Length: 303
Image (tube, rainbow, N blue to C red; front, side, top):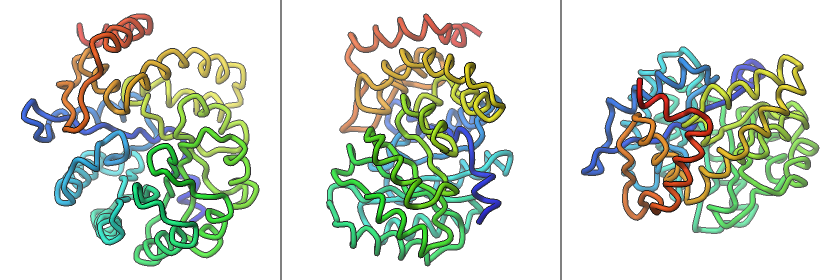
């Protein structure tokens, strides 16, 4: 899996799922977004993760979205769909489907709502890992799942399951993140899922990031990794601070609502979310518009 670890580095863009006004999936806009991401320099594509609203879809819809994405990417960059679920058997089914369609890996979230203990989480991920041959990236997001995947559990999974190659840490506890690399090994792929920690995680040995901000500014999010890899530390730091206002406004409401509102303003999609989510308030949308203007991102809508 060493080749996979090297290949699955950089900015893996977690592409949103666009919907029509009737809340049906807009596959035309979806393929356009994926092509735009690749053209803008994203190093990989992920779908049906948090930004893709997977919990609002049926399993069949998720498989369809994954299939369309896989064919659109067409091996131009690595494709790593989100295949986790609150339901163990659904996660197994989706991860096997990812392998069958030719995905380069799968991103498997900690089951949400159930609050399993660490031993149960170990069994859950180990069972999935043993059912497939593709690389797996664990997805730890305690703010959504209500449980933290502890560093010792991650280390045990990395040791016992060779195809578990990394973890996306959407965890603001930077001490925890450091312990993950200490215990799982510094060759374990660590990805930031917290926008403001994308640069700091690279500094401690991270492999890249899966940042929702890439939906709006893919070139800049990818360039943060590019600058760091090229040894341009000052340039990476400058870009880190430059991106902070955009990162902040895109999380003024529940992800992906602000990102979808922004993409709507940019003329990329209709800003539609499936219930129970909805677009941000007018006040937050005004903030988003102001920030987008400051980054000249609304210029895209005029082209």
